[in-house]
Length: 513
Image (cartoon, rainbow, N blue to C red; front, top):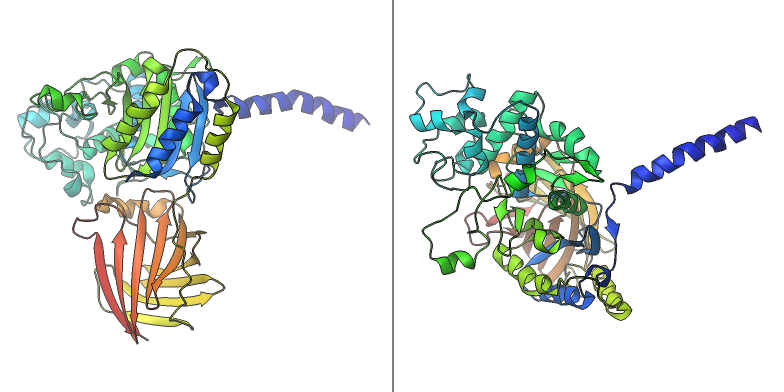
């Protein structure tokens, strides 16, 4: 009896704290009308996305600090992380803000001062002038962007410092992802920690962001300019933190004044552009500390192919998006055209019918799969030995059973079995690396867990098999179009981005074993 009573007393003390710990970092939910936006307008936005050329993977809209619409396009899911690409830069800059507030560096410090052992034998005057602030504002002065050559090297810091600086630092904007890597390296130098670990108690834990991961360079420094993976709600929390000027649950999380400083335009991208051109582009409104100014007095962190943390202070609103699109401006245009005008002052009358329609749309969001009833030309397991190819695919084995096609890819790096379902998504994991924008960073993925994937197959005709492999923690998809002709196979490997660029489609051939 005493033991039971003691247990009850302990639970009465611990449980409220546990519940509080669960809820304090969970975003509150509300209805659109209660926060001054009509549900019908959000439905219109989703309808516009559905008929657009943009492939959305997730969407969250917050007003007055509350989530009023959220959805994930199946097979993408709420619980999954998503590669942020250059949205990672805003987190790296935040680490710089913390380091400055703690007296570990100043923005006027010279970049070379942090790397005495990597300094070139002869440092140009411009390299000697380069500061932390120049790195933050993408005004290094290098041209072109050296990310491609730097990320292929074995020592990224040393290689970056050898790239000639053409313009005086601070004078000219040029997007430069390895400039952000240098910021990550600087933070690691002054703190003795990777940016990921440094941000853990300062940013991720206070916001309730669980188990983030970040790619690393060969020197085990977080890539900085890309490679961070977070859930969509984590992106929304980060944007909401900025909207609240660095406060979370009444506590100042970010250094005082950092939000204002980081979100202010410190350099104009192309000051010589015609005013009309600048006014129509969200890439010509000025650049802060790894943050883009937007039209409509908004600002954002963004990543390639449409990974967004958008802050709209005038409307007390935040939007988080993950997607794959070749037209990022087009996605922003939909927001400014449909959602922004719908944001009203004060509450709107409740509209349960419109709310129900919106919730139904959000619950039904899905990326399309093809439907077919074509019989397979392969009735038994087959293995094809491939001719030498750039993908280093040694063989492909196909096993069909119960509407599942298991494909076993053998490469020089290992054997990778992947299961594809007929006309629906088969969830799974693989260590086979998928398409990725920064090819030189692929080796840095070795320390990350297996890639989560969703896979489906369709027979285009009796001899043509389409295998679709979505890497659902990234924006990208790999498609294998397999043409069977007797004992021969021809496979067109297609990535889902930059489809007209060299390497977007690779053809490999083989014969039955």
